[in-house]
Amino acid sequence: MITHDKVGADEDLAREVLIIARDIAPCLDSFPDESEQQKDALAILRRVYKDITARGSRFIKGQSIGPARVEYTDLGSAFDGQPRRALRALCGSAASAGAPVGSFPTERPIARLWPERY
Image 1 (tube, helix red, strand yellow):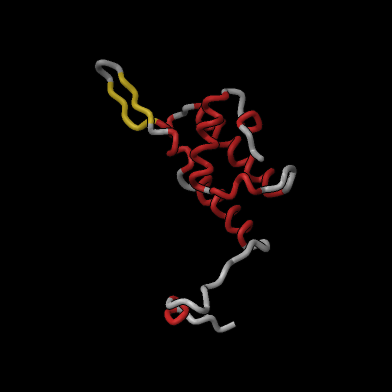
Image 2: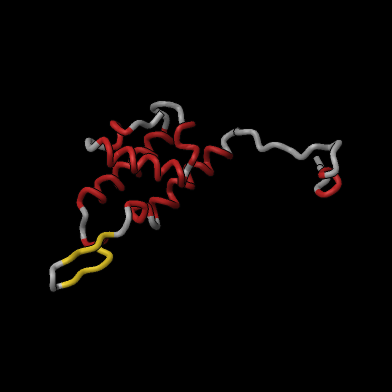
C-alpha cells in the first residue's frame, strides 16, 4: 500500500497528493508492495510532490504588480496532463492483468438487452 511517507516529507501535502491521486486512479492501493506498478505509481506521485513544493511559474494562475499579488492554481492542477494519464494507464493495466471483468445476469430482464455471446 502506498502511504504518505513514501511520497514526501511534508505529511499534510503528501496525504493530499495521495487523496487526489486515489480519486484519479482508485486502483493505487491494489498494487502489491514492491511491485513494478507500485514503483511506477510512486515515481509519478513523487514527481508531482516535487513539482508542488517547487511552486514554479507553472502553478501561477494570476499575477499583479500593485499591490503585489500572486495567485496559484489548486493542488489538483499538478496532475493535469501527463501525470493524470499515467496514473490512469497504471489502473488500466491493473484491470487487464487478470481482474474479473464480470458478466450480465442471464435470468433477469437485462439479459434481453445485452445477451451474452460467449
